[in-house]
Amino acid sequence: MYKLVFVFAAAMAAFPQQAPPQARAAARPQSTRSREFDEGWVNAFNGKDLSGWIKVGNEEWTVENGTIHGKAVTKDYGYLMTEKKYIDLQMTVRFKCEGDGNSGVFVHTEFKPGTADVSQGMQFEIDPTWYHHTGGLYGDGRGWIAWPAPENEFVVRKDEWNEYYLEVQGNRYRARLNSIWVMDFTDPSPKSFDGHIALQLHSGGQGNMRFKDIAIRDLSSH
Image 1 (cartoon, helix red, strand yellow):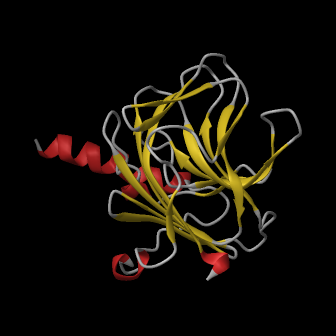
Image 2: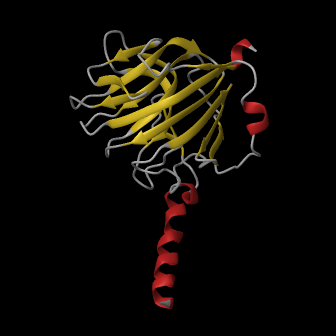
């Protein structure tokens, strides 16, 4: 028994050494629940159709039982993008990973005309596999920018509903997943400041995601 515990502890100790070149952003701010849900919040999904959203790429986006269902039908990238653009924002969304495919929520996003190629934007990662950095930041042509701390890699739950709270103010990005703060990162060299929000289906043909209860607060107008 003691030998097993020692081996497990030794294995876990190795993970922090895998941090990316830039900060892993492990700070946990105090809960903002008392001030999050005040004036200015707007439901971004009506539960009936995709009004207010634009499909980018050839993947399948439908509404089923009050949820947005994104499913890969090719092996390319696919996105569902808001019609509106945002600068500073707060967002809440519930998501469920029904397949093994990678996903994410993009902010400040634009695409090359007529394609599903992202030309700018930062992604809050969603991946059902442990140690694939759900809650981390990726994008703007720089690859991984910040990861959650190792102890927060277990927060995501596959085949269950997960609650995401995301916040962008200037060059500061924060993410709370299932009531745990997993990311608080201030980007020293931001590249995008304005653009659409987009839900992603990663390339590879394994995407099978559901989203619901999407609400957005445009901080730029307050």
